[in-house]
Length: 137
Image (cartoon, rainbow, N blue to C red):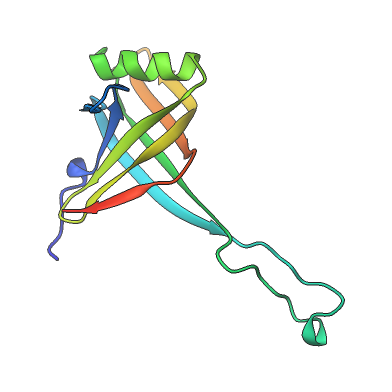
């Protein structure tokens, strides 16, 4: 695989329709997707020589974050609505030359930053809220 442009890593928000249409979150300059696996410790008095034992599988999760320039676009309105409704919505993350990850996420932080000598910026953080699916490119 060759190097990819970071700007092609896209966060898209779903419209809740059937079939669902995804719109790229406008103005993002930096995007991060992280997959996490948490262990579940099941060590007990019967564990061999008291070696830690872990439950197979554990707990999987993903976090998503982005930051960029506030564009006051339709995607910004969708983000605001999703945050203030405190709901869970479908998001899609396009990973160039790799595929896409789609599933339910909850917006855990939405921040607007407006320095007196610069543009208004937006930052957001999301946490997975259910099973995610992967589709190869």
